[in-house]
Image (cartoon, rainbow over all chains, first blue to last red; front, side, top):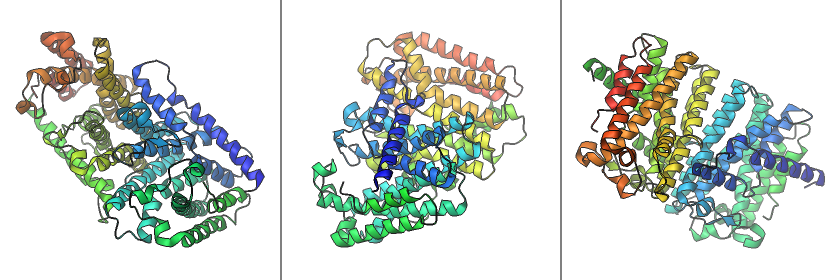
Length: 305
Length: 305
């Protein structure tokens, strides 16, 4: 990726991290034992994620608002996407789901704080976004309608017919190994990761008062980027090393779960990822100043970690 | 309780149950394996709860709106309180929390559907209320501001500084048996059950466009009723039989958790419960047509199941 874009992305991620760490709703002040749940949530949030969801919200805001600067409220709203993503990671790592003790090289939240507190920390981060978005509307930082639209986007894409449906399909695919085909993997990935990425791009669009056509472009970009990302993930799970990736490799084949790598083959998978990334980039061609988002999409297909 | 009020309450509970079972967001249509999470959520919701939270919302709506009939939107909004309560019960019953295999005489959700689906069903019911309330605003059934107020009430009272904080204190009290005093129990109970009861009473008040003074009364009522309810629960856990109660007794003392029964003694506990119920009832004295809610509060102190 072009150096200028890389610098912008680092600056934005630093800003997103600072909004996450300053989140007033997660401040501990009483020293009461219940506040351990806040510590656990902050621990999970600060575990060094790529912040791709809030970054997409910020960049789509820039793309469609054509404003010179990004107001704080965009970062404050974008942080709720990272909270939702983090809640799902906390619960995914728990013994009844993937039973992973490590997350990005550090003890998983339920390992560090115990499974009961881990469970509650996930619950807390699942609910907090709606309080933050309601607060922003009550404080007048965003309009009531904007808040309602963001709440709908987040809850619908994270909930039963979005991310949670994808997690259910993932559980199911571990049991029924046969009969998993490319169509199933596309559906599962679209729900499990695509939905929240779509919410992220649309958060930026809604905050920028984007047109319907612009929102459609954001959705097409998100759908293609999400699928490309998953396909490359599946390839790296086989071809990369734990050192390069920062997490154990081979986990899918250990669980006997068929992936895009198995079904499309190494070359076919990478070719498909490239074509999806290109489709995402092409969708934004018509918008001036879409260079960063286009390069971001294309960089996914050639990443090695 | 007076027979007329008993009949009204049965009618309202039947109506609430019918709104729960008809909830469009929980309909299964595809026959896809991900829809098992919807089945698990409906199973948990239909396990025969007392529906006290939606009932309080409906009755406070009647009290403050002085309308002759209750519009459907009040029931639709009230159902989200039962969903939030049910999500917390599903997660509470799981192995890492209370590890209860039975809930109201039936297998707990995680026992019936497996722990992974149980976890996700709890997550789904934690998030769904916000989608329902946002949908109601987008459809024009409630104003945007009303939706924002309800979303704030629900998320703040269910979240980190409400119900979840109470669950954290409950976990902590199991570890640190000493140093648990009446003040701690009041705080824990206020957070764990009082907050959501308060949200329930205020749901009705907000939907009825109640005045600030009326909202204050709703909060005082909820606080006193919630505490009375918890104290009687603690007494029944010792003095009642599993047959009468429909659930195992003696569970608190098995876990070695001090309760109001231990700290206030049997007579002291019942005296305190009566006085709290009376305070709740007295708070509503100034409102015409508050007979049902006043009797409901007083009946708590003399219930035997």
